[in-house]
Length: 452
Image 1: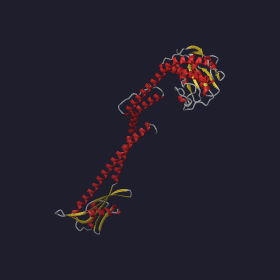
Image 2: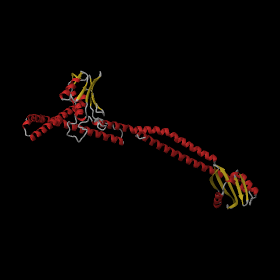
Image 3: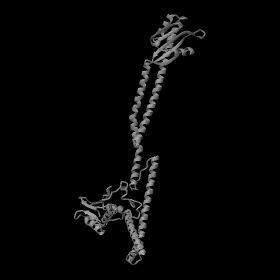
Image 4: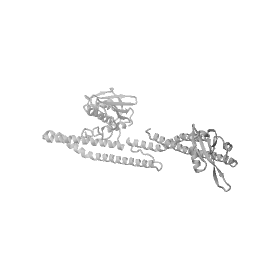
């Protein structure tokens, strides 16, 4: 229950069900109260009418026969008292009449009280019989009438109303679920769009944009993300333009500097030891700067879309063997390949890829370093492995990132941090790809039908 959709669904259904239940309970309670009140009024009015029909015919003080007559007129479950006389019938004698008797006597009026006995609801009614003179004066006669009326039927009606309300609330549940699904979908649809856009931006696709719809908070967020993406794209374009401009501007002075260094290198044998050491350091740094500028120029070509393949029909195995031999790695790298694998390829770019992969394996991995070549009818596979510890999970996503080095503290290590990025760009320029896994197993895939 951690997804936003599930939480919205549960919240919406809970609110709807609670609201329906509260409304049903309130309606049932109000209807039940009204029903009970109406029943009580009806029962008390009926008893008063029954007493009023007989009371004028009674003799005062009444005898036992008058009390019996009044009891019969008042109906079953009735008690009529006067001084020491009483006439009783039914269940009225089982109730404690103290409370209603006191209330009726104190107020000299009809009093009703709801009680429960043996699991059944009853209405106890107590009323004094009053003598009304011709001038309207009302005088208590001393006769008291007590009656018990069964409210079971009324309670059943109230229970029926409650069950009906509960069923009505339950019927609202499926509708609430459907409405919740619709509401969650309308809310989450733009959220999913923003999520997909954010993922594309995180993956490097700075052209990703979300389409704003409506005028709510999500629309404002969509506009903000689009503005952020435009800023990132503009910053990336500025950075690439700067790198391209700087690298091109540096090529000419670097070429001059390289020529001077070549002269200096030929004369180092005649220099004093301190001067010779300084000269060799300058030669090394100029070489590193030259390679960095060459890598930046190459990257700028990929970014500008001006990098081109020079495809020729060549032997892939021979190209790899030449790469290893030219760098003196044949004794350190085991080549496991068929005798020949001819296919269209750009020899220079394949040389760059293999030199980068084998060089990294020798510098950062461990022996044995192996290069395996295989082929299918559709593509050629070049796999480079080493006996090193492999790539940690946190390193793997950044292996092909530009200027990324596994250990930032080793900033002076050979390489510009562009080698693997350039290698993969060269692979993709062929229509293939370059991948890596946690075992530091790099696999170059080259289609055997390369477009020129």
